[in-house]
Length: 149
Ligand SMILES: [Zn+2]
Ligand SMILES: [Zn+2]
Image: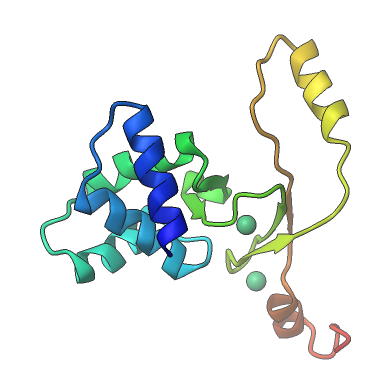
């Protein structure tokens, strides 16, 4: 997608960062995977396109992409960060058994949350809700017939 490439090029240049083939390939991998992926999964995808890319480069680039606003980081159980190509406001469902993660849209009183965070002396820049529980597949495996289809 040329638009993303251009956005990335402009954002990198605006930060005095070099536009490298590695950075472009990593951004393309995040976009093409099209789901919540770990840095290792993104690395595997990029290494297939561009041998010689290192995992530390992938981590550093993902951090940069997050700063620029081209990916969002989702915190999950166990501290493994997932990188999300969807950057508009949304929330996540995380299954406590299988670790499946899915987007969920719903109204959240964002301003109230941010105001509470500021009240605690915090300087918030982003809020996202993580809803934990059991996904449909795990519920069905535990108690067959429990999930209405
Ligand atoms: Zn599950
Ligand atoms: Zn998401």
